[in-house]
Image 1 (tube, rainbow, N blue to C red):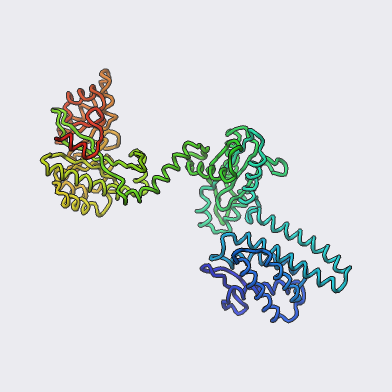
Image 2 (image 1 turned 30 degrees about the horizontal axis):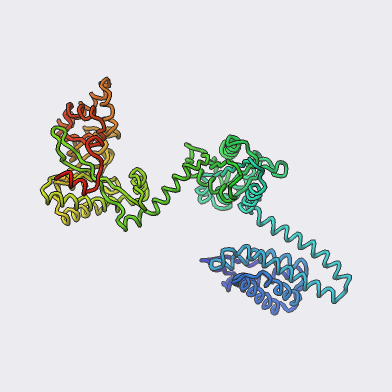
Length: 591
């Protein structure tokens, strides 16, 4: 049998000579072989030409807009007129064309190509049947009657085959995504008041890697083994119609249960399914004994007010909250899903917001604790979108995850240098402190960006302070930190006391300032907490011994302020001293 395949989106065939030929010609040749296998075909060259013409007509009808499946009827009749007419010929024709036509229509065909092919072949079969009937009636009425009866049975069998192929997975023979959606739709439409349902979406976490390593044939064997194990723990729908086990393709299976009593029921089914797949090693495959890990996304709720697609979507969302080995399953939570959706929308909106200049720095003043004077300001990013002030806790994390922290940090640095340059030009010798993320520090263009910002704004390098994390201070690139220090730029360790940095490690880095984390400052509210006071006092002393200045963050009470001043802390910032404000407000504060 000649091969028919697809390369680069173009179906090609290999004829008897092994030489490539056009897709339609290869398909027509294969079609003729299948038809000839059912009986004698006169004038084979003519028959091949006829079949190629019919194939072109079928493709044109499938692509036509608007689509009319009735176009298949005369094509089916034309095949009978070409004296290629028998129920078996139609059977092999429908089977072959159901496989070939969708492939020939890709990739430029309509998205609904499989459904169009199904409808078109139904009309093709009807036209074929009608023509065959008419031909038989001309020969003998009794013969025509018997052939019609035989053909109706064959047609039912063909339709049953098509129906089963539409609703079942070809590898595992389990219900597929289409049948699962029909099950969910029926459950929602027919649900009585108060009726509940649950869906467990099971993912074989290691399947993709195994499939690539062992090959797709071994991967299919693996899927069939997994399907068999899941059948052992999920009741057969024929015995209990509440359950449906489906294979959605690839590494995902689903269990739907109608009439649940609560989330615990579907969680139990999830556990049994995961144990069936994971607890016992799978049979040896190509010399390997495979043991799999699984995770499950679970949704359980009332059917009322839901749509069929909601269930799979919510199960998929819950599946994203799992982690192999740590969180093997997660139950859908609408509030958490809403937060995820908000984060996704904000992440999608951030690039355009950066281009529109929606991000701007606000400045929190830092005071000398020895005398009430503003000595520095810390630039903090703010984002106002459609009149809403977006919390930095939301968008800073998103920026770090998406890599947008680099352009955001650059924009913030330039604006802070611009404002700082203006303040210095007006005679206010403020230190401008800007946060620098690890991603920014790893940017090869960092030094050039800083030099350009300082040159353009006139801000002296000695008036710029960059705040880095503890981990960056300890493990960051020595060369970059040294270059920054050589320019006169001050380097501060932010949130000191929350990470793994220690003063001994910092003594070998060009650090000038340590900023005590608010967690250390908070303990100073309790006068009886001598341990907290001792930790802060000793930290300040050690920093001073190393020639480092100390700034306390998060000062919110008079008790904290008094304690820090008594302990010799150099500078402080926090809501007690001043909240972050726009540049204009800081200018007013300095006058």
